[in-house]
Image (cartoon, rainbow, N blue to C red; front, side):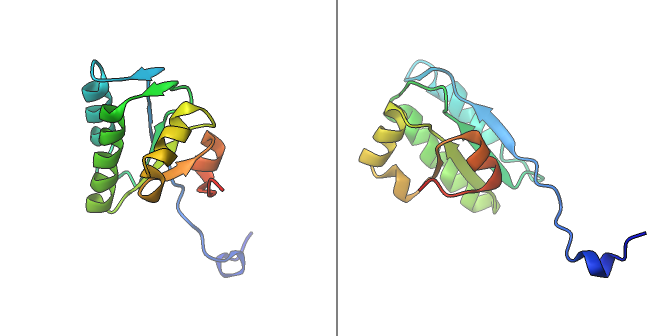
Length: 118
């Protein structure tokens, strides 16, 4: 039998809401993706992960939804983590300066653990 005081503080399990983006995000589908991302910020959700790891193209409408979701995270006391891999989407986010606002991660494991992108 374990003494709870000897174990230390027990942290609750964090189960994130993951929204997987399609291979391409543009004006034709960005509203669907964006509204799905915003819908993920429910009261019991503390972390939302936008998974763009398989997204090869994301135009300005998709990036705009990421910025809106970032504002939603702040207003709900949640956290938005964006998985962007090492490809074109990662580079676009950096060129546009979105990395100054968004918490970017290179892979899902890093996003799940909250390890910085580096």
